[in-house]
Length: 355
Ligand code: MRU
Image (tube, rainbow, N blue to C red; front, side, top):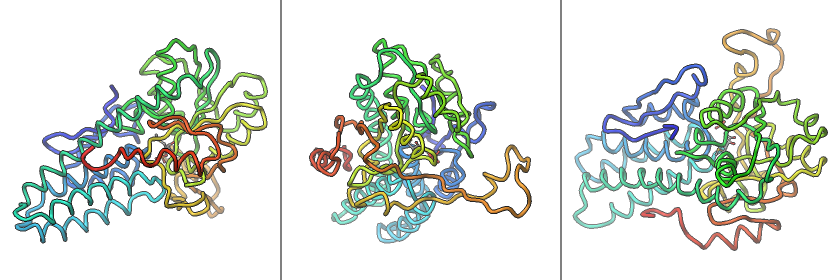
């Protein structure tokens, strides 16, 4: 399995995704501030991986704390939560994970006789449980989504929603992996995904690692391939899904969805329940992260654009629900109207503290 992130006795170990595909190196975060930095700089990225990393960051912070009482630990814990929450605003999994850790903390802190050590052990356990649940959810998404993919043909994906974006197996790439395990003959087309190149660097590396036939496309090539009949389905991940089914995902996803509609190609979104945000009514209310201009103006340290030109760098866009053929979750496959299908599956109640 690709070791995206891992809890170790020395700290949290991350595969450094800024250096892939040419270098397979690791960053060991020994305090929560480094975990926050690792998330912000995209050493680790992808909504589910960001969530579990934040949970592990909190577990690490509490493990390292010198607080002599539960009250003192609670004050420090608040600071840790604020620091981790300030890293990346769009992936709702980040806030879901922090809330889940807070729930465990407060439930224990309210009980008589609870010590700092009890809270430490519980938070470390909770973060590790979230890690295991994330892999299990990916496997379940795979099983639910595989039958939707063509028996043979091209499947286009955008960004990286694979093992590298989760604790293992992947969401969109997990569905592709499951379909292949069930005998589908799939050729993956990976959009390069400017400006951070998650498709060209990460999806291509991860799929080649598993021997899955893969072709990288520049972002402006999808329409032409669709017109040539090379793409039978599109599948992507999500950073946040609003209550009406609008999907925030990597910048460029919206364009792919519109193209898919024009060419009569199904457009699927695979995401765990921790990505669904029923408190946000529509995509218009989803905060979109703006990243540094330098990601656009430079490539591998070399300047591409003239000095002083205007630059846009939104990291995500919103695909309106009407373009989404189905949302694949670990709880099942959802169809429009999403207001209803999302509400129907909400009460299942997994992804809660304690499993
Ligand atoms: O900026 P990134 O690389 O964190 O963006 C990742 C994506 O957009 C993914 O598609 C999304 O987080 C889903 S990952 C399973």
